[in-house]
Length: 198
Image (cartoon, rainbow, N blue to C red; front, side):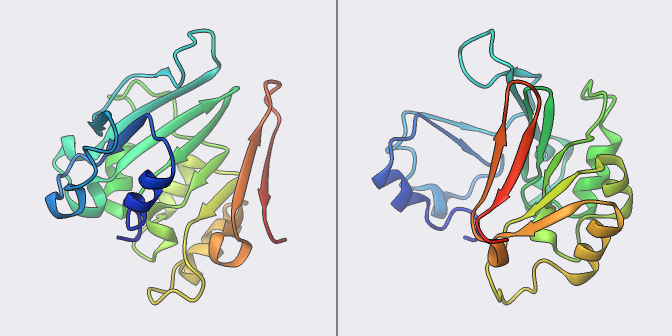
């Protein structure tokens, strides 16, 4: 519920053209979603494709379905890679150490040159069970964005992980502390990460 708890309300208030659901089915959580969005699909590994229908776009994306590798639960999260004007963003969902390890193992199989990304959406909210040293050393993000509520009961992000982000040379922001975080990418390749609160 920490990821999709408000989805029904959002779908009532906004027009959504496409809904991408996790590989693993959750009938209780999904029972009312299919009727609200005509184009609903499940996460499945893909090659790079245009984010929009305009084939000249420099906005590409691909899905990596870790469930296809036999992983379950948090580690079966749909991982999304974005390629925006030459910059890469890695969205990891709730993967933990096992999922991170599997991603690193799969780099050649996925025909990726690298998972190195300017921006990393922190795995599993920056929990102590994620953001391993090997994973961060490979991704080498300039920015790590943590989605976690202020004073949440889980202690996300874990202080050892925020320390690891700093040690990796990454600037990190937490939605619970900094509010909404906006990423702005320009066709020149320049980009900014802008927290609501400094």
